[in-house]
Image 1 (cartoon, rainbow, N blue to C red):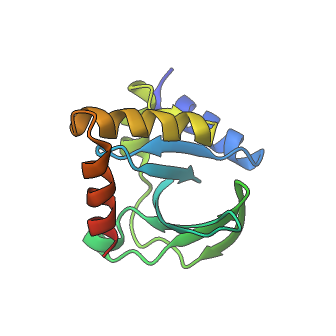
Image 2: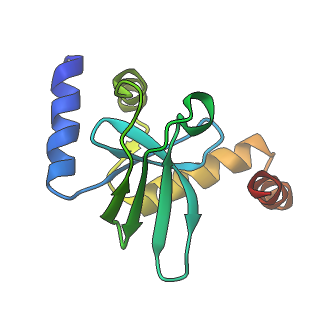
Length: 132
């Protein structure tokens, strides 16, 4: 497959309301929607998740998405940069794109365990300090 075919297939899946998930280098959950990548900023007990563009810090991109039960319920602001096609293609080629969130979460936990030598306490501490 060439780059355009892969991206077209990703967009078609998204139009069919199937979200796609990937992982950061550290194993944190990310969301792919309409050729952009978002990181999970927060989640609530009612299964709402707020996702922010991965270029929020570096490029001050204000785009965000809210999902509930894995369905996009709100989009806020437009992106101020080009699509994340290159990043997405790299993740697709490395097998790091998932259609099921639990599968992505499990893979992310495996990555975190390997980075911390299986020490889950240090993982929790890292995540807590990252959110402060």
